Length: 341
Image (cartoon, rainbow, N blue to C red; front, side):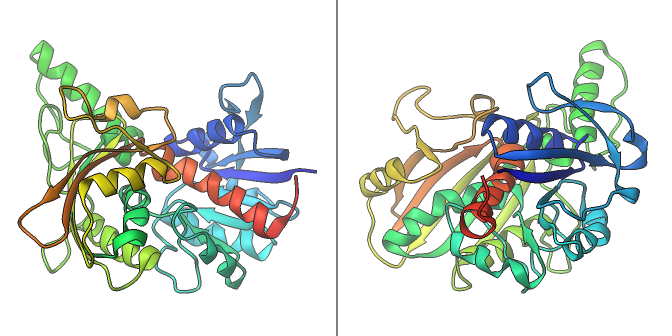
């Protein structure tokens, strides 16, 4: 016996990736529904890479009664309005937006890091998926934290345009083409030209000079891994279509060598260590696209602080940063609580 699963926002980048991951991982399904806004109602989309077609249903008229799990990939406004409706109907919501993440009654889950926190889902029948940049970082940090206790994290992100949705990907393509053919370059989705450029600005600015994306990395890491960890983040948009990268500097309470860290990361769930000190002995964003792992490279000691390490972390943000993590949460929920399949 399988589950009845709804994918809300099924026509977007992350929603389509959720369908792909569900199909790839052979999630035990009795029924799957693709739901989106009225603009897409009646359209047909593939269930992942299979030949199966799903007719898109209008969320305004969708009845969540009798459905087990709803994977939401439609943004904060949709999550704000429809997640409580689905939850009230008895359907557990796994939401990819930022809306529910810091609600104290909503668990914020990365299955490799804090699986036990999922037990609190019944308070609101909603589980939150963290920000894409947070998700891959905490997967890399948790095994090291368990070994030597992280005191402080300083991270600079190199985030792909797919994090801004289809419009962001389209803008990078259109600007790149315009530059090559000599046409004017227009910035619409981003605040400045993104083609052949980097932009140290993701989401809105806050009063302290940080951006909301940077704030998310701080507070989400603390909620997932523990409030004592200090986090400083600088989030940068780069002209890459898919795949987020992060340069991470860590300070630990106890001594840990680069060799010890490499050994720990090599055995950690969800991580692929690719760390050869030679040309090409590391992973870049283009190599992680379509892969489920979080890749770690360039592990080395930082001599400027006691017990310091630096490392490079890369992941497909549409996968581990969004779709894959949501499906892994659904799998965890099934194993621990729903007990089907």
